[in-house]
Image 1: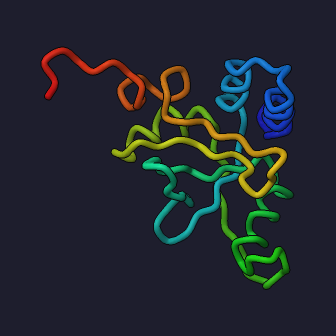
Image 2 (image 1 turned 180 degrees about the horizontal axis):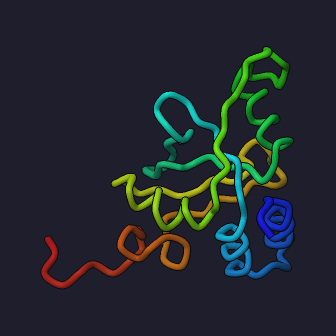
Length: 140
């Protein structure tokens, strides 16, 4: 339990059509993922009105991301990337709600055949911050 290997396996199963999406979410919750950090905190990207926390299942996938970000062509630049090891449940249950904007987790984004998005939807993030949660009665 813990490292991102099982999460990467659940993502691969889901991408080939054989995996259970809720088992994959459960594996993210249990996994320790690597999240790059900079002076502003956890590394995020904005896409489609959602703030995505970039998380990685291991050092190899994080290194591929770092190489692509450093030069755009995957070559080494010698830059050192700092990262935090964070339990997926903490990302989903604590960090995303504290962000104050629609947010999700993008896993292994530098791996075109292994990437997976966990959007701010019910069943993934708390209902209070899910974009698909029913509106409260009387809310304007």
